Image (cartoon, rainbow, N blue to C red; front, side):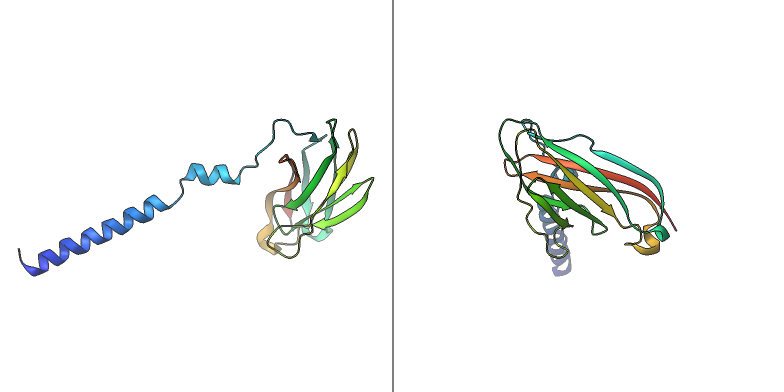
Length: 169
């Protein structure tokens, strides 16, 4: 076999080998989607009275919109809400319970997000004020949006509160 043909066969083999390694190392779409989904505890004592709110049409020029969600400890033991965070920098959350008011909480990785550490007694309810800024994304933020606020209990439970709106100029 001539030298150029050996070189070509070797080169193609190396390229195929590298492509195979990259393909095997990349996570599947199913595992990526699963890792983005909140893991809910079956025995979660923390529950939301309402987990979704639609603002409808809102204008960027009218400023922030707010909605209050209520979350309760439905169990017989204390529940510690260890973390509270949002899915986007345009959304903030403030929690109020008998122990006081804490926040605002935002998106992890974009500035300081304090730990929540809000303890709810059995039967106690806390209010989570969700504030959405329709102007945060500028003109590219026009249209339908969906955002989430997550409350994580220290026992592994997770509650997701979702908002939706259609942003107009």
